[in-house]
Image (cartoon, rainbow, N blue to C red; front, side, top):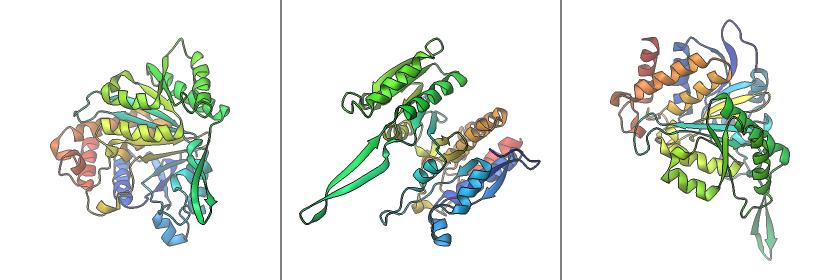
Length: 344
């Protein structure tokens, strides 16, 4: 991460596609109200970048993140077909962002109250990396589709260590290791075995247990309060994190952090939602909560908590809720209310 300047900590800002520019604009205004902790370098990625430069992930954007080691990113669109790889996956690989952290906390009481979970997902291995190919048979070039999943002992140990360290640092009580070792005995069996070995080093400070992924999914619906920190492989983490977001109001409330040794990128988990782009309907909460994670990451926990408290207070009122939460506040109005709260 670049050193702080009198104008704030240098950070790359990627507005993204669809609703991205709208919610990023709110985030910038909110950070200004917090005292401008970051000095933004605005760069492009996704469809906007493709139209301007012919590349979904331009070299200028990568260079900026290398300089700052820190980025806040709006949602990006990867075109379907045409051989385009996911921009998010490319960013994770380019900066070896091996840990994906997705907290979920009840802000608006609903079907599930008092949820406070954190999912830690391995970000670089498993089936999600997309090592795929077709096998032709007869006249059908796509007769067989094959995918290769790869987990390494080193990668499993690194993400397990991260999850247990995170739990201790944030005064959590338990880590649950999620796997499918009853069927994928090598691919996820090694992950389970390695994570349990790491857990032994923390046995005097934390509880830890494990769950098969399908059982975990069911128990998250029946009794989510039994979980605290969940650590999982890449694909399982992607699926479970969306399920967990559903416990607290949906993806509009789901922030994410992608963390590596030399860089960290913070984002809203949801997509670019082009169907509502430009209509002022988007909920900026997920990106703002990701901004709070970003403040924690750079050692500004007081500002992070001030932001979370303000979000909680605004969402506690009917007038502060966007359409996805049953309210009528526009994207910009939500930002205005939040800024009033921060400055009040």
